Amino acid sequence: MNKPPMLTAEQALEHLLGHAKVVSETERVAMQSALGRVLAEDVNSLVDVPPLDNTSMDGYAVRTADITKEGAVLRVNQRIPAGSVGKPLEAACAARIFTGAPVPPNADAIIMQEDTSLVAGQADQVQVNYIPKLGQWIRRRGEDLSAGKVALHAGIFLRPQELGVAASAGLTHLNVKRRVRVAAFFTGDELALPGEPLKPGGIYNSNRDTLLACLRSLGCDATDLGIIPDRLDATREALRKASKDHDLIITSGGVSVGEEDHIKPAVTAEGRLDLWQIAIKPGKPLAFGAVRKAEQAEAGEAWFIGLPGNPVSSFVTFLLFVRPFILKLQGRSSESMPRYLMRADFAWPKADRRNEFLRVKVNSQGGLDLFPNQSSGVLTSASWGDGLIDCPAGQAFEAGSMVKYIPFSALLT
Image 1 (cartoon, rainbow, N blue to C red):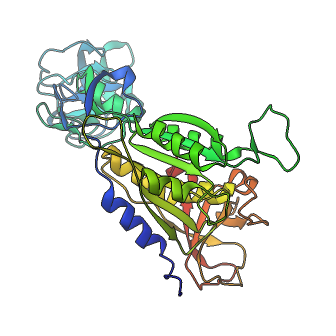
Image 2: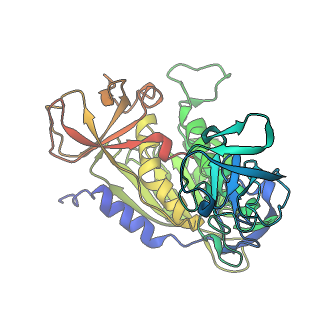
């Protein structure tokens, strides 16, 4: 029997995203609790920002009609610090003004303090050494936000800067999507947790901490169900437990076809499963399906994604497939993976038949260096690196070639 052709990364991702449905539940949270959440609806500003025309510089508010040549002398008849409102500016007068203060009526430009000098013996007069342009150094009312207009759009992942915008709009609470709930467990009798003694043939479970940290960096509620014994009954029980209160279940290991790999029969018994071979390196096997929520009054399912067990394969396939799937569940407005053209300062002479993702680091010359060992078991390559090169199947390249670079910093925030 001929094996079915391997899926491309694009085909696998399209299939995944075609099934993902945005979490519908929302909650209202205080601003201080909104960091890392996804905005559920557009929010409008309650005020104009800034509320009045104001100065962006320390200096003098003037009427440009009064300054037709350098060296013009104006009478300083008022002082306007931030938080105060001045009176209308009279002809041939200037107002001493400080950054953020409202521009007084009739003034139409700000002269920076550095472009003026005081008139000797005349404390209330200033000499203007620069002919101003109309409107210079004035921030207009509502140029940042307008009252009643959208300040933030639904689907935005709320970072510190978005919370600052919401605060400047006068908002104290935001409606956000419920956090996506993800359960994770790990299969393999060889696995042990750090701090435990290693038995012969044992290894410490790095995937647990890597994947749980990835989930939390994306704003998920992540539940750790631990290491599950390599038995079919234990795997099925873990799936039933994980399905109860979670939107997604992810596992690491056990998605091959060996006698000790129980994920496929367990998920098939508790729900449904597709087992894919994807033409990528590192990574290749990926399982996708759903597990029935058997104890719910209404029929429902928790999505299931099974990742390979090798640590780099698990990490890379999480970034390529699980991350965009979660973004879709969260209802984020942007799901694309950033790729930037950068210079490879190394040669990759041997093309692979699979789409390769090479661990690289940005060097001081603005190019990319390659980690010398690209094995799927060498997790230090991901720690050393700043990101991945997306190298298409069958493509070799020479040093100096422009390649597609995916930074880790853009994927895990």
